[in-house]
Amino acid sequence: SFAYRYPSAKDSSLGVSGSRYDTGRKIFENLLNSNQPTITMTVTEGEKKKTITDLEKTSVLRAKEQHLQELFQDFVSRYPEVQQVIEESYNRLYNRTVSREYDGSHLVIDGLAQNISLRPHQENAIQRIVEEKRALLAHEVGSGKTLTMLGAGFKLKELGMVHKPLYVVPSSLSAQFGQEIMKFFPTKKVFVTNKKDFVKARRKQFVSRIITGDYDAIVIGDSQFEKIPVSKERQMNYIEDKLNELREIKTHSENKYTVKEAEQSISGLEKQLEELQRFNRDSFIDFE
Image 1 (cartoon, rainbow, N blue to C red):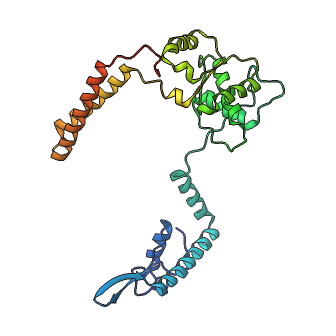
Image 2: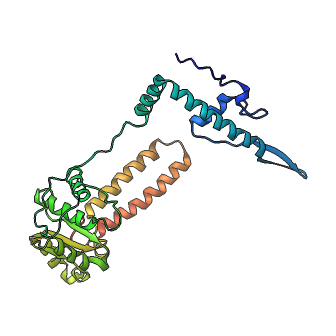
Image 3: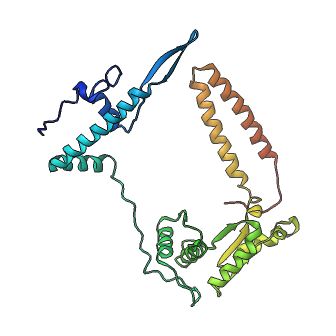
């Protein structure tokens, strides 16, 4: 429905003669797909043949690409109807998702020191965490990520969405992180763990403090956090689920190599399951 007097895309004047891109249509299809091919040629060196880039024809191809782009832009600029079709098609196919925005300007974080105030991006990040129950704080260095995560944790606790926020930090920084909490929230009750809490003789006392203590936040070093295992029951359930999947594959697969791999995996998982069933560790805290 759009009349235009430029040469046909099939016109050889828009292509590169003596190549696979001998018409404008072929070049234009690559442009639409963001492809920028090169033209090659075969040369003989001694008794061997090899393929190299045909620099002369590739240079002509680049000039033709530029010319076609200019023709297309000129065509679109002349016809508002075409502009509308392109815009609607692009939005329908590629631009359908709009990033959700979060407004935390109304938030009040109980216990925040009077000399400290949240910046807009921190308020919005806290609001996002409250709504989605999770977030990645991919903010720049110095943007106040620590205050943001603390504010989010205390807001979640205030709303009854969590009981005791747990902050896992590098072990060498756990004491410093605890001090940061007290700087921003001086009235909060914080339990900063250390490696002594994980000594076997003190584990029950440690667990009891976490369970019964009225803490607003708990700080734990990553090396200590790694010592908290997933419960035996959850591990067994996970292995049994994997075994069921592998047995299903073994039963229905017609590929002998797939069956053999499944049998090997089943054997290994069954041994893990037996070891778990025999294993009895001292009473401690589970990840759950």
